Image (cartoon, rainbow, N blue to C red; front, side):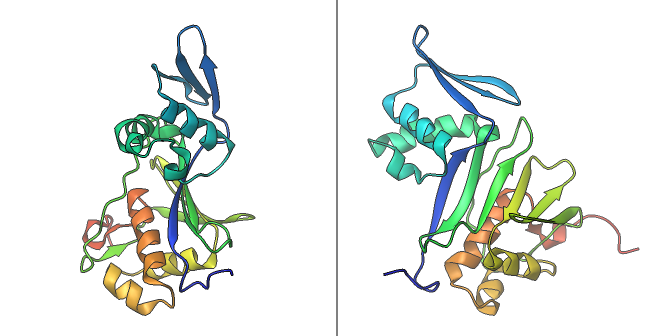
Length: 208
């Protein structure tokens, strides 16, 4: 049975950018990842890293499902992907088969992306320099100088972004929007990590 939106859980998906090609070099034992930024090399990757990158080259995956040994997720796979963050697309999805909520694409050679827990009482807001563009695949959020580009794939994510036009706390946002709390909280966390939302007092520029 397909879960209802209220029952659906958010899932975190990882994939490589479409231009990334992974090559296993037998002689050196390296993995070579070719992209618009050049070639990144992973020295002596273990089976868990090789399998995760192989799966990510094919499309978005749940890392826990792509890692043969779960302990290696934290000791090998995640540290490697942290160094390759400029090649990694991060996607927030739901397990309701309705497609992803949003995706964060790296657009710079240095594009760190770290999810952090946000205080429920701390107001966040879209910075003034964020530009929204309507695409066939959804709505894109971009900002000059930002290392990321965010694409909203579903109306639920767009509802959260619309609310962030004004200062709002995560607690208020989850209470206001007709969405399961995990969706609202997840979208805000991804936007903050991508630099498309920030503490409201950090907004720059004058009102003139």
